[in-house]
Image (cartoon, rainbow, N blue to C red):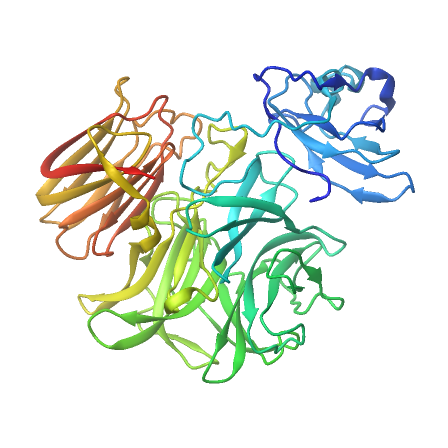
Length: 569
């Protein structure tokens, strides 16, 4: 994949490039009602594949001149109209063997599909972003679809973010690990695709660890990745990197863990000092399973947790397990993160967690089984996991900013989905229960620029709260987001029902409400074109919601507080 895909060409509305030449219908051979081949010419660098999102997936087998199949992606090749293009690098003698699906009585004859008229050669890829709603300071893929963050780690001053990725379109498909790096958790540089599908299946979520003591035998400070191979069954596989996570080689004896269950995925690892063993926590249907290993290759199941605890409205996914300080106590406790879809309090996907103790073998929750705790009360905070090897003992988390109820339908085309801003996690006590504290990472403080007189499409708003408060973000079209703090009830809410484009899904227009665990004194609101993230400045409340205004919000009105607007550098 990394040899073939370089960058997204852009939306169909862009001006044509002088370097483009049509592939031409002479290259097309129609072999049946649902089968065609395209013989690509040498002498060009790329072919631009036309994508139409309402089309059925076509199975595209890429065959090189030795008759070997090198890729088998599913692509929504255009039948009637073209939404955008994705590029494929051409090698000598390359052949596209394409099988379409769906009812031909509705789609018409294969020979008349729009993809043949619009498929083009080019030697230069235009990577300029043309999406009005693409965030400024949040991580997004250059093109295509992104969901769960994967394999995140910090090493040698660089934050590595891997993610579930489809380079062949902006809807879920062809799962592989994309890769980006950053030195400040805000400005990200795209890297070649890291781990690609193979005979064991697509590459689902997982984690990376820095093997400081060479327990795996791949070298001190090697980076070892674990991921779910999603084929006929879901199994756990391993890959390793000796160049700091830039490239990976898959373990020759994959898979390393198997089980007889359909939903068995998303391994997350960490080193447990007290037992001198690696710990893996795995999502297994409606519970989490805990494994241990001394060498990252041979694993022993230790225990399971969760069948009677928390929300069980959907499948448990994307776990994490970490030891955190409890504010003002000098104590530490363990927190087990459990992302669930569906089952969130406001519908769809969300991040729940449990607090307790872990002895290297078993996690014990301190709350009653019926107690459910949510890390973020917005609709668009899912698949939350932390970076391995973060500096200063920090636990830095990123989430996927979307919801499975409408993730494939949000009104963007060149890309779909962004990650949240980074958040540092700790614990605090309120009313006899221990809760997760969520604070914007200090890297966000470094991005704060000068004061602004009005809102921009990418800014931070700091609100000094004086009792019960109402705050409205609004544009000149009257589209608005309304936030309310009820000082008596100690609740905070956000209403996005009139925020802009909301009709693409009946699940999108909504009001979300969070407990504040005490009086709100100051809010930090991060606005970035299509998202709003709100935090209690003391880290006791977080709410993340997508918005799609047809033009940027320019005015902020506050009753019961004072707002200061800062630019984001």
